[in-house]
Length: 195
Image (cartoon, rainbow, N blue to C red; front, side, top):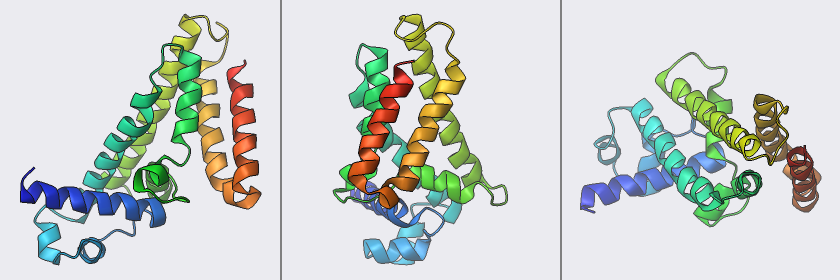
């Protein structure tokens, strides 16, 4: 990796961490220049503009999500894969960054941009969520094909419920307390997958 690639990697890592804590919309060229101890010109030389920088950060985070959550959970038994994915997804950003209490930056971005005027960043963030929901639905379909889930199960509905369970957990884990929320999350997950 040359110096320019290392600098870009450093910027993307800082963007990942910042968006996990504060959200993507808060990230500016100035924010990252301070976090990375670079000039604004040093940051902008790696991206065309703020939007392309934010999309590069989202793309980088998605790659990290795939490496840290999806790849490790590829087990032969599809129901076990779904369960492992849902458990690994929980607090994954904090594990990657070595800090607890971080939310999923992909979810944060989708929520932040959901009601904003249409933009490339909004489209990118919402497309990421559509890909994740589609992945969950494919895993449910495989579990049905392998007779690990009932043939008459509403596959899109189960994927939606799994996704919704994660969102609810993110919103309530601090209110309920992490231990209680984690217990309820695991119990609810088991119940959904026992269908």
